[in-house]
Length: 339
Image (cartoon, rainbow, N blue to C red):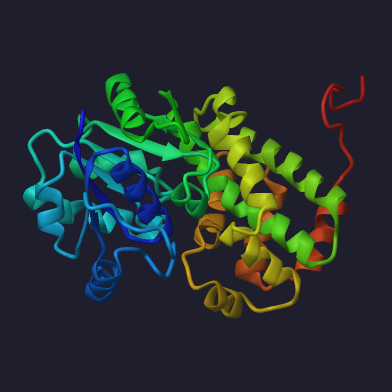
């Protein structure tokens, strides 16, 4: 059954999701904040900046009128950066239906508070609002080109999780469901920080051994934090955890990995951000994850070194030295005293 879906955020990922939903036969309204961007999108009927050549179907409409986009949509899918997430939600209220359904594809946590985005939705729109998060190993360009992709849709409402998965599902795009909103969000946020680390290792000239070690030990960090905050281990070993981690650590379509590559090659943070020209979620998220790890007593040495590089002037090579010189310990299987 065709639905009216509003997609809020016309970057690469928001545009790719709008394309997917429109190709699946839904009436899609894509909202962008910048009026000039909207004019270009409507004139070109594609997002030339982020997804050139992926033409918009007739049932994909673009507007910068937020009230209109909310009013005509029965389901709202948010794809803005995490730092803009809370600010957007109250602006939806004037035209929001009495029974709104909110989903988001933002991979990050709230910077100021360290809260997960489902908590922000509950605080802003009410705890009874049906809410779902989309995450997994997804590059926007591949989704826009109908290449095979799988994601996870997490919601405390089984009915809404299934509804969202049904809207997205097609022969090229498979959507799984879960009730583990915590694990899905932490996987999607933490992997961005670890992808920066993997990119830096490659930028320094290290090779496959170092990359594999970083991914594996990074997964251990993700698991420790996820379990401490109430996530499920099977979620973090699934698409939204290890799946997304592998993707972003190993492929240069990842902005976070490219950012790390630049740092590893000796470029400044500001220069690399300017060169990439898109949001790099891991830059902000590193500080949030670092604070969460400290608050909950979770050991996350890779995350800590990324944070120090971004905020304390530590060099990537010094960070590597710090990691390698950590106290030797068993990976698993032995007690602390070696018995």
